[in-house]
Amino acid sequence: MQISKRIIMPGEEKTGLDLPIAKHFGRATYFAVDDLDDNYGVLDVRAEINPGEHAGDLGHAYSHLLALKPNVLVTYDMGVGCFRSLPGLGVTVLKATGTTVKEALEQFREGKLEPLIGGCVNSSLPRPLLALN
Image (tube, rainbow, N blue to C red):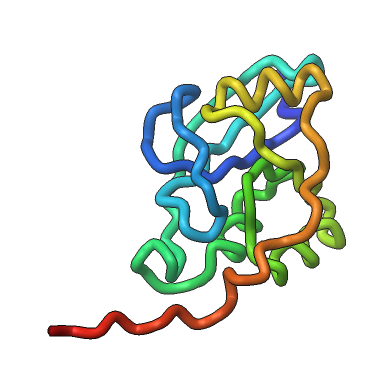
């Protein structure tokens, strides 16, 4: 069967459909890549490592996301810059409400996921340095 939709979700573990959805897109350890058929049946679920700077590597989560060629991103939150650019690139951004990939896919199939409204304004601000004693 041919892939109709590719849904990406940020995750914390490499556990397939039971993968917990990460609280913030850019800081996720993994991206759950969910390929669906025309009836939104699951064809494939895999976890791809997020080698972005927030995960301790080089590059940006945004670039790695686009390389996976998603139609839809389901997330709790994300930075403003990424949030603003994705719709212009054909990626629908939806607000996660479940706790796992499985729950989010069920809610997607049922049309229960709403568009994400705005991005996290604090995500691109520098973090304070911790004082060393």
